[in-house]
Length: 287
Ligand SMILES: [Zn+2]
Image (cartoon, helix red, strand yellow):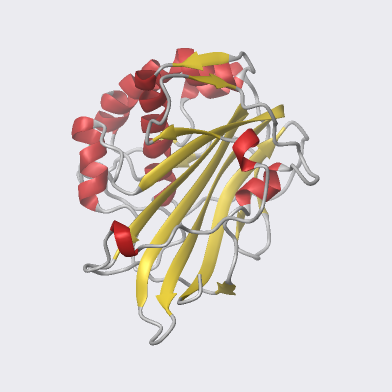
C-alpha cells in the first residue's frame, strides 16, 4: 500500500432484524428508468423478492447513509423505481426461481453443497441485487457505479462484471441487510483517482454475501491494481468464495459464523475494507 492512497466514503444500506422498531416513514429517491434495459421503470418493484418476505417477516427496516441519522422504514418490503415490470417479471423472476432452492435453503440455515454452476447461480443473484441496490444510492447527478453495459450484460446473459469477487458467510440469527460502500484509490504522487471499488454486503435470514467490483481508469490493468486490503480477521474460516469459482464444490456454511456483535460480528464484515480516510463524497471514475 506504500505508493497508494485510499479514500473511503459513503456507505448506506437497509437493515432489518427480528427486533421490532418504530419510527417515521421514508421513501428513498430513485431513478426513473430501468437500470437493466433503460426503458421507463413505471411501477415500483420489490428490492427483496416476494418469496423472501413470505418465508420470514423481518419487521421494520432501519436505513442509514454514512454517519447521518438513521431512518426507520416500517415495511421491510422496500420498493425501488429503477426496474421495469418486464425485467422484473422476466429474467429477474427466473433468476429468483433458480435461487429459491439454494438461497432459500441457506436463508433458513440448511447446510448445502454448492457445485460450480450453483455457485454461479447464487453469484448472479448477488450481482443482480447489488446492481438494484446501486440504483438506490443517494444520487450524485444520477451517477451509479455499475455501468449501463454491465447492467445490460446481466439482463441479456447474466454476466457477472469483470474484476468482481463474491463470498458467502452465515449468521446464527436471522437478519435482512443490504448495504454498499465505495472506495477510491488515489495515486499518492498526484492524487489522481485510478481504482474505484464498490463493496456490497447482504444478509437474508442466515445467508450472508459480500461482493466487490473494481473499476479502473484506462491504462491501469490487473497487474498494476493492488488488492484492496482488508482488516485482519478470520476471513478464511468465515467466508467461502463463490466467484470466481475456485473449488469443485463448497459446503455452506463456512466453519465460523458472523455473530450479531463482538469480534466475529457481522459489523466487522461490513467494515472489512474500511481503511483510509472517510470522505464526504466519492465521484465515480470517468474513464
Ligand atoms: Zn427493464
